[in-house]
Length: 399
Image 1 (tube, rainbow, N blue to C red):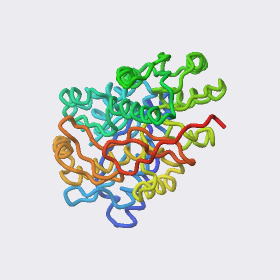
Image 2: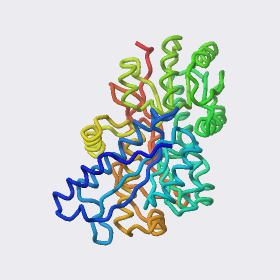
Image 3: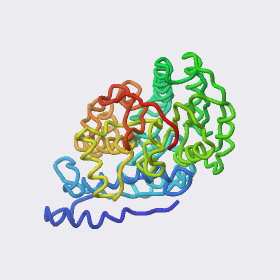
Image 4: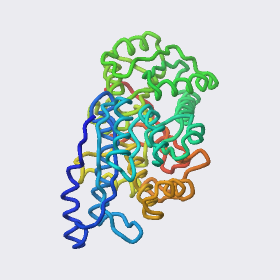
């Protein structure tokens, strides 16, 4: 576990002090953050999680801080690399709570790491706005951990909306009936594959290939070769970032020519479009955004200016929205964590994605489920109560 204090804090405080003349003497709000900078999920966290945190801290401190009971308080960010290791995630959260005395802790990255940390968030009374935790167990988890909140949707919603998209293509005569499905063998992939199997069968699809692979698998050619041998019409992978790239690359090498190609996390990354260029056109993936909305465009421009990188077209904006939610809660009720959690359950928050509130299961009911690369941009094609979805297009080979 590496402690890595946020290096831009000093300059951010200096800017605020120059503006206010008092900020240097002001108390700070200690915000903890733990997520992968190394390990299998580092590629995802360094695109989706860390830059939005950096942007949010920069913007809050540049504006003079958060207004807490009439006092402007700057943010001090304390961050740890959990190395994509649940044991390190737990140790980091423990340290943030008991040694760093963090006022609040930003939820970890990924379903498995969020579930690993949930008991500690609960033990120490921290609200856990778990952005990148997608599960159908949200109701049970919210009952077990009342301060755990969810923003990115459920497993069944993501699987169901993909099945609906493919069913629509089939009913239009654009897609056959044979589906090859693979999944990464961790909580995220296993739960999605389990949810998707009966949904595909109920929709009349034939699953002609169904397998999993361990998290961190480097050589994915056996997976793709097995899928290709089954001669599917559609390929679906419940994948994490490294395997999303690896599966796509192997599909191109093997000439896996399907009418619908879907990979999950990281498909909306700008790096995916850059890596595969025109070959990415028509690739379906998890999530999406409305890239034409003014709020998203302003966020994306600030993200690029402050971090030097573009946000992804799915969870980046939701991560930032979760921090907007935390900020609005702190400014409404102060630093008492129990009161912040109560406020999270009761309020509606204005975010770059639009209004967000949490239901009886601590779940946000409005989210994107399926997106697609179209004309060099990853656009949402299916959502739950979000505006801006566009019609799906057909994939035409890998050229």
